[in-house]
Image 1 (tube, rainbow, N blue to C red):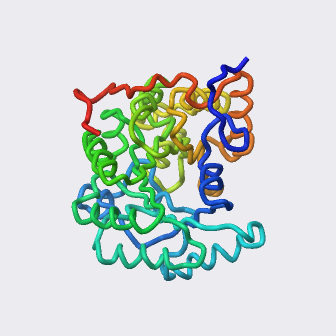
Image 2: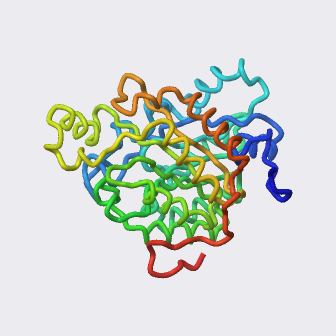
Length: 338
C-alpha cells in the first residue's frame, strides 16, 4: 500500500511532470516553441574550444528549433500555426534552445527575448545556456525578464564528474555550475538542469551520484536525456570507428549501449531520490532518425515513457519516495552557499 503522505501529482502521474504543472498554473495547455536566435557557443567559436561537446551536433542540440534566418516572430508564427488545430486554446513558452543563448551582445539578447514575449499568447520564456555564460550584465537582463514574465533558465550540466566532463569537452568545472546556480537562485530565477545518461565511461553509480547531487538543490526542474550518438558529431565518428575496428579506439570503446529495460530502471531510481517539488521536463529525448546511430531502441519513445510509468506502478512508488530532504555533495569539497 502507498504511504499516506505520498504526494499527489497532476493527472495522477507518479512524478511532477512540467506539462501538468504549467496547465495547473496557467489554466491552459502550455506548449514550448523552440527558437533559433542565431547564437553560437564558446565551446565552438574558439573562445574555449572548437567543435563543441563530444555529443553535440552541428545544430547545437536544436535539431527541432526554428530557422535562424527567420525573425523570432516568424519562427513563433510558423510553429503556432501548425499547433493551433490540435490545441486551439493553447498558450506558449518561447524556448531559446539552440546553442548558448546568453553568449554574445546583451542588447541583442534583450531585443530577441522581448520580441518573443510580444508574440500573442506567449506567457513566458525559457533560455538554454551554459553556466559559464552568465556574467553580471547577463544576470541583470535575466533578473529584469524574471520580473516581467514567467522565466526559467536551462543549464547544461550533463554530469558532476570531472573526468567525464573533460572527456566530453564540456570546458568548465563543477564549481562554475555551483556558482551559476547560486547567482540564479539569488535572483529567484527558476533553473532547469540537464543530465545526460549513458555518457562514455560512466557507470550506473556515477549517474545516480549526479542525480543525488541535484536532489536537494534549489532547482525548478530537471531534464534527463538519454545519450544519443548522432552522425556528424565527434562521438558519432568515434562510435563508427569503433564498430569498424573494435577496441582500437579507447574513447569510443568506453561507450556501453544502455538497454531499454536498464534505462527505465535507472530513470525510475533517479526520480525516486529527487525532491517531489522538482518539475520533470524530459525523461528520454529525441533525435532525428536519419542521423541516429545508437541506441536504436530510443526511437520508441512511447514504449520508454510507458515503461517508466509501469515501473513506478510495479513498485507502488513515486517521485521523491526516497528523497532524504538534504542534498548530497558528493564531489565538491564544501557545500555552496545557496
